[in-house]
Image 1 (cartoon, rainbow, N blue to C red):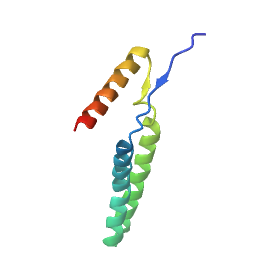
Image 2 (cartoon, rainbow, N blue to C red):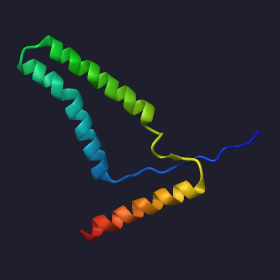
Image 3 (tube, one colour):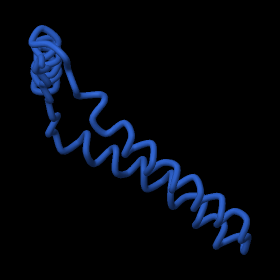
Length: 91
């Protein structure tokens, strides 16, 4: 049985995390809050359904964007992260 190498890189920058959290919050809570202010239960339910679908999509994709199948792929990803760090530091 052949063992597969799996390399996972986690981007730990807080700004990326905060931006993703803010976007998810707006997507989930936005329609619900509009429904509350407009007294529309349909809008509140739509917000709930879209929020649920958002969390399902997040769960499905949580590891796919950072799972790499080879050391070369991992090196390219690390190089891109280092380049972004240098660019952010220079700005």
